[in-house]
Length: 311
Image (cartoon, rainbow, N blue to C red):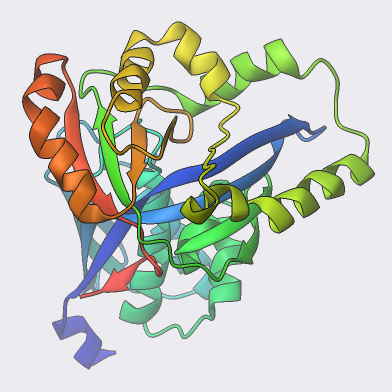
């Protein structure tokens, strides 16, 4: 441990987009039963970890909008891992933030998973990914996905994961108004009040939807079939209420060579897929000025085979 205390661990913590988000219904535990395809993209936050011998978790960040107190998911993750491992060491953590907050890109969930993975190594705990996934599910529904990352089917409230063997080479163009954020919890409440009039009771229906996504999910995202579609049930609620999302989707729909477009997660980030990164970059260059005039930040990303990485 003395050797570890001298070193610094740096981790790349990636965002995600939803290539499918289906709300099956409301569960009796208050969560929603979901069927999703989640995919990491190469828009990264960076986390640096160093041991401290004070037994404290100290978080700093270059993002003034973020709390660095006990309510931050990074701090919650670190404290949960310390408690579970019964260790006395603490950690100094620094977050360099690039993924926008409240954007539907799950930056906070990614950071939480990266913290578990980073401190597992820093503290030499040797916990396997199954254990880290179990811990992460106590912190948030999207966090288990990031322990393995890449592209996965996500069921239950998001914690039931099935790895997909796929390596799409699509280019992704993201649009987000930096002045707009969306509360995931509020969006699910609004969706629930409009579309979930009773609790789920049919296990057969849940399994049928899961099987359909297993069998057909990737087929619907295969450009060779010339029929790419992305389903996001939450878009039904957010697009109706949020002019930023409505306009972003409209802008993306008119782009040359756009294969398909959608909102990610609970929004407000929207994205379009192109056959490759170069095509996406050309569209961004051709429309960058327009996007800025309309109030949007924009990025081009690739789809990742793997998620969180050590540098």
